[in-house]
Length: 381
Ligand code: SF4
Image 1 (tube, rainbow, N blue to C red):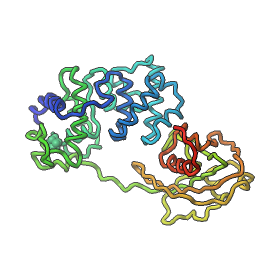
Image 2: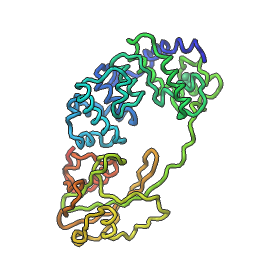
Image 3: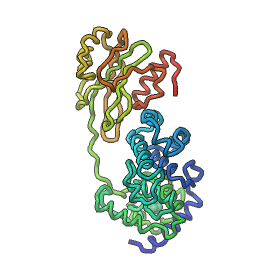
Image 4: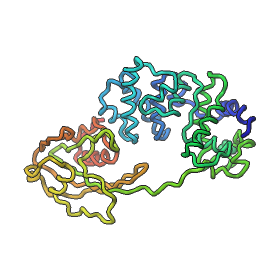
């Protein structure tokens, strides 16, 4: 391992940032740990362009950790709608409450304490500590893992614990000595991975720009740039079917609040059947109202209700791709002459014009907005 590179890395990277780093992002140069934390969580699985649009909106609606802590979770989820990975929004809410209750509304500066808060992993804790408190805490997100694996030609799958531990040790060793340099250094690391040492087109292979580490980068010297970091081969994602009940009554649709621990946890969606491994052909083409009610509203003893419903019509088949699975949603529509009443408190009739008040999974939101627009409803946001 090159000692010279270890000793000069931070200085060179900070110099690189002065010329080629990103600037002017709304969450940069901010020492408010709340603002840093929200931006870090939002950036985790969302592209910068989208965060640029949504971050100011979120901060306007929830300007402080106290405001977020006392907000209604449905309002937080509605504000998060479209950003995906909704556990982030639920964790933000729970974490805000913990900061208010356990830390008197002030984020701790110690990364070890930050890491104990819901939704804050080791790397995010390092970023918050570095940006807001100038702590000498390393970060190690996917971009940083790639940079380090290439610079030091670290072989072995980065998911492996031994490799991961080695990368953390290295990330710590490379930190600048001065705490004052931590914000710019951390930002530089993020920017270098996102814009120069990218996964598919690192600048050393395009010849467009000269990487400041070109002479020391072990992957470049050994012609292994695109081979590092090594990853374990992913198995093909499993596929599932589920039937969904879209029942309308006048201007309203029946929605169901999803369990908090499920996919799309705590969001409002259509009543749905259990997910089953994808059938080779659609077995439910001739679904009856009775069968669908039994599948999607179990325990509701709804034989009387069913008589008030029209025959089912299959109106959509939506494929949704999650990180580790694919779901085929078969949407069955019926309408009832009145708003049927159910025992389950998680079922609720919602006016199409008021959907904006509810956090909905993106494909369901698009589907229902399509219905609203077809009716000419004025949608709330
Ligand atoms: S030489 Fe290429 S692979 Fe190495 S750090 Fe620079 S951009 Fe990344």
